[in-house]
Length: 193
Ligand code: FE
Image 1 (cartoon, rainbow, N blue to C red):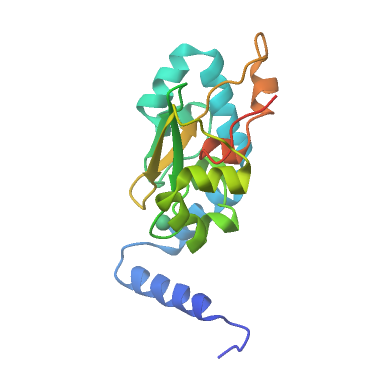
Image 2 (image 1 turned 120 degrees about the vertical axis):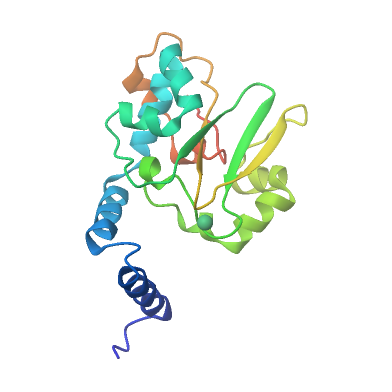
């Protein structure tokens, strides 16, 4: 046994071996999924958001079927869980969490930040999401705005379509995409100009 190997490395190797022996997943499939996540980054989700802000037809597709909307921009979604997109409005704000582990829209945003997987984030997002957003991100959601916390799971991944900030009239897609951060697309922050 390699002493540099952690328990989680050995657990991962064991799970993969069992899944492969049972014929549930193949090594090439595992490599393909890892390659998709390695290639993904928040810039992909930002392009989707920016396009939805300027193109009502695309916005409709995005809110109806996030997977299709991602693929329309050339983002690889094969074998990935379905992607749902939740629209923030002046009355409703969404916050994404995986209460169980670390489910995150990896295909469109890349790897989740470390804090996303922490027990603290997962618990506080449920217990007092307003306090969590205000104290950790200085994101203040007014009391008049409803805050909905959504649970991302292994079967369904959620992403947020944030509100387009004021002062961006006439901006093109590239300029808009540049202001959209990963946190904006899971609801811990909101886009700023
Ligand atoms: Fe999870």
